[in-house]
Image (cartoon, rainbow, N blue to C red; front, side, top):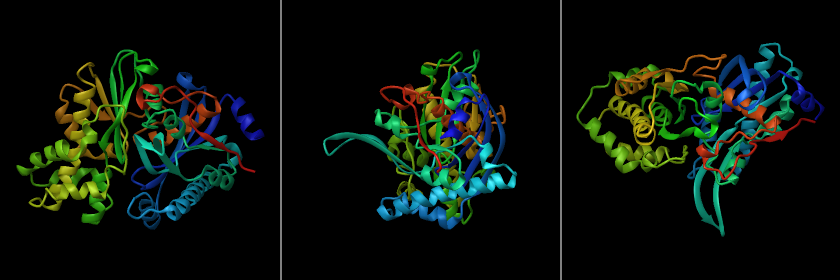
Length: 400
């Protein structure tokens, strides 16, 4: 506890942000220097690395996250497995840089989402929303010897919110502008957007998940093309265009995918964009070859983003710039689809700011949220999640 008291009182802190995303591809670790909190936050990324997750571990996590194959034993084991995985990668990260764990003030860990159910449902006489992230912070803190803050979504969900998206808090701190209205799109496994109107205050922020990001694209690549992902979108770009493409895209949007058309606030995950969802698409794609199907899936990610911007942002707002981050920002075909549609708006990859870039942004977010926790500052945005009130996000584990 003494270590944390000293950290809170320090003007500048060194913090690690850690997560494995919806795609379960890698453990991302960002080391940042941070001071202040809230809109007075000042930060600089010192270093970042991504550690690929062993395919067998990934497969186990995904099975635990699925109704068909998951059970209480899987979830229990996965909670400790992910905790040990994160701790191991953190210790490697520090050792390779000759950094002592004593010099790190605390860790912010998102963990791994096992299930996300942001829908009000009557359950045993209670109205419930629920979410579960595993990778127990007690495992991480005791194996790294560093105080660890995690479980950032639960408090917001307890207050009626979706617990997501969380990245708009970082977007607001770093990218609000007094003269330009901006949309920041993060394309991970799921795609989400943040709209910051010119001169926005915190309660002006509009943000929500738009639908699939890389999740369907990557899954199709792995299952049907025997590759991890479509690098730069080259395969999708090379596919022969047919008349059936637009028919299938519209069928997905208007028949198979009610989430994309749902009014915000909204959030989603693997529970919606699962193997079952992909199989429904494939039943309508019998006349397309594998590369054409991949093209449709990539275009659908773009289409779902475009639909949400046109339906829920553009009617009442002007947009000057659109910035992309996350793994999908490196998919040139996807980026060009957005550029082709929004011809009067500048669309580009997120520019590096204070070391924050397209690859490390989400890891930085959880370091920032951990800093908000130790500063006793609420960091959910009620206009985004739908929670009844602002609250402090996170829980703390201190090593013995």
